Structures are given as structure tokens and as C-alpha cells.
Amino acid sequence: MLKTIKQWLGAAADVAMPRVCPVCGKALDGDERWICRKCLAALPRTRYEEVEFNTMEQRFAGKVPIERATAYFFYEKGSPYASVLHDIKYHNSPRMGRWLTARAVSDMAGSHFFDGINMVTAVPLHRSKLAQRGYNQSKYLARGIADALNIPYLETLKAVRPHSTQTHKGAMERWQNIQGNYALRNNTDDLTGKHILLVDDVVTTGSTLTVCSSLLKTIPGVTVSLFTLAAARLD
Image (cartoon, rainbow, N blue to C red; front, top):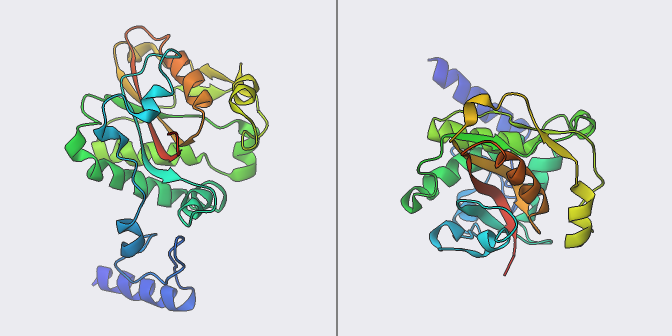
């Protein structure tokens, strides 16, 4: 009975304020969550997890030792799918990101990418940006993976100073822009020897992930793998 009432209320809400797919703008039906079936089926998957020493992993070679790295889909400016990332990050839709990363775990199950990972953490957001935005989208992404894998999520890193936007910077400028911006929290004593999955929303040059991975690697015996929801085309 309760489920029926919730379904009825949900249907009424959809009539009053229709939910639409952020990719194509089509109204979602009652069984569709966040993105319509057609656009989900056409999601531009990277499938990096299926490739040994893939293009994303090559970005970190010689900079920081990582176990493996992947991204769920490609990000291209102007693509209809760019709106998914934009909505998650700026339009108060972090739950869509949490739902998408849970789907990613299911979609990537055959690759064994997540095998052996003990815990999940996220690239942190400085308190000034957190106050402005209201949430850290990467934390939502990381929690979606942690929930799907039934492993702990732990905030292991902190942003100790803000930095200007990375959007229009080149690789060297991005690297210089984030030096000294991050630090380890004081809760890493139990992480010795763990395999940690570090999560962020998008990878471009990889400078932020390099700095954060380097910090995690100072914990004795820690192995780091990387996951981003999206990746700018790196090849």
C-alpha cells in the first residue's frame, strides 16, 4: 500500500514538474532514473579498464606509481553528455553522480577493475568552494562506488587552500596551480597496506590526481588506483 502511494505521488510530481533526461531533454518515464534508456545505451564509454596500460594510466607513468586507472565515459566540450557532468557538479544533482558510479561498478564487473580494493576516498573540495556549491560532487561519486562494492568510504585528504579554476590552464599551469593545496588528514593510521581507490569527477591532465595519489602513497604499503566519472579524450 505504501509503495503504491509513493508511486502515485511520484507520478503526480512528474506531471507537475516533469523530470527530463539531461542529455536529450526527453521526459523520463516512471522507470527511468536520471538519464533515459536510449542515452544510457549510447553513453560514450572509455572502456579503459579493459586495456592494459591504457591511455589514462600512461598519464601517470613516471609521476606517481598507481595500480590501475579508468574513467566511465568520455567528456567532450559541447557534447550532449557534457551536461551530465555539468549538472552533477554545478546544478545540484550530485545524487545522479552517485547513481552513475554505482552503475559503473555493475558495468565494469567483468573487467575485475575493482577487485582487491579495500576502501574508497575522494579528491577533496576546499571549504570556500564547499560553502559556495553546498557539496563535494566527488564525494558523492566515491560513495556510489563504496556502496555498490560494500566497502568503506573514508575522507583521507583535505584541501588546505583554494585554487583558481583549472578550466583554461595548460598542463604546466595546472600543476603549478595546485602545489601545496592538499594534505593528508589525521585518520590514516589504519590504512597501512590498503588498496585505496581515489575518485574524482573528471581527468584532463591528471595533475590533481597525481598530487593526491602522491600523498596517499606516503602511507606505508598503500596501493592506489584511480577512477573518474569522465575523462577528456587523452589520446
